[in-house]
Image 1 (cartoon, rainbow, N blue to C red):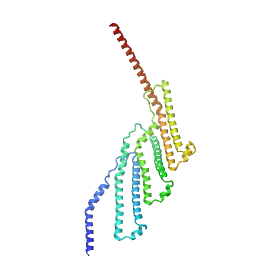
Image 2: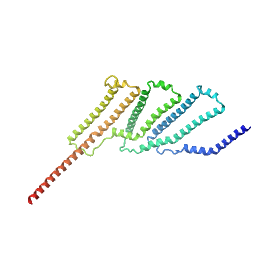
Image 3: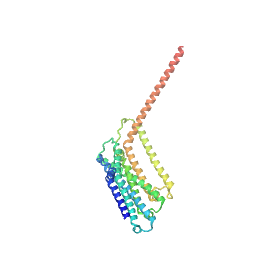
Length: 361
């Protein structure tokens, strides 16, 4: 009777504690979990929808990582406590131990759910607002048509895909350097570890997209400027044939230098890493591992994409821009020579005056 009364006393004190702190605790949880209840004012921004989905994918990937780690921890603990499976393990426990373990597991997942809700309600909007605020600082100097904007977005998407290929190529190459048969080794991992790895890869993917979204407007403006903007020089002399010849020569020399430098770097990389086949690029690419091949293809395609945009920019603007600079430089040289000549004449006049003064004395 004494023990029963003691248990009932403890239960009623526990109920009293829960009743007293129920309202206060629920209010605090709601206040902490749902701080951000305002709608984003910038939902009309063209980058809003992309930022919204990418931020959601990033947070889901982070949740997946932590969920996998918790599952892996539970699997690790049960695997070291007993060699039997989980249902058989529970049959060996007393009622109190079962209640304690189930309570701890529920408390752990409850905390995980609360943290997920908190991060979702606060982190989701924080990521979106950060992306939109950073893009808001970028102002376009030119008015582009809708077709030009679509073209800019397509090129930006291609560059983002190439960036993703580079990132995953690096990760894949690192994994292949650790183990040659990653697939077989991965399938032997516990479910929790596999889930965490899936979350890490997803977080890496969406993290790259978040990074790219910070340069959404800036990148689109640069691409559209390179493709569609024609530079109009303030100074140009149609009859200045020498300046035109010098301009063409400079641009041609710069082109040769850049192309030669790229070929030299690629040849150097092939020579340093090739095990056979000489300096043949395609044989070298075929001999790479999957991760290095993905990295190499993404880097090469990205390089040619950027070079194509630069070529388009210089095709539209390089000639007149360089011509204007050469004309300005030519004008400065002429002015400098005239000033130097005037100073030399002035010095001669001073010397003549000094000689005359000496003669008169």
